[in-house]
Image (cartoon, rainbow, N blue to C red; front, side, top):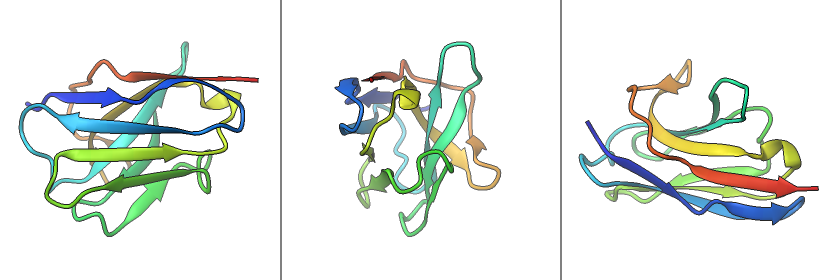
Length: 121
């Protein structure tokens, strides 16, 4: 079991940007695929973006393509999500987790506290 910690969320106006970070406080995740998920109140947690184990491939939900960029540093237990041109509908709690590439589902059932992103109109 790995402990994951998300950070970087905040309150921004529509059109603004935020950069989220994910770090491991336990087992390293440098050699596994990682992903970002988000949950809007009243809705199920949904896939946002994913990056392959070596960082050579990235994948995005249609709703964020062209606006969000997922990245990771080789050999380090860190991962980021650069979010640009934010929209009010991006408001959610964002989580990171190990991910199964296709169908983009979480690898395990552990979820950190997440980081809140709020985008005002």
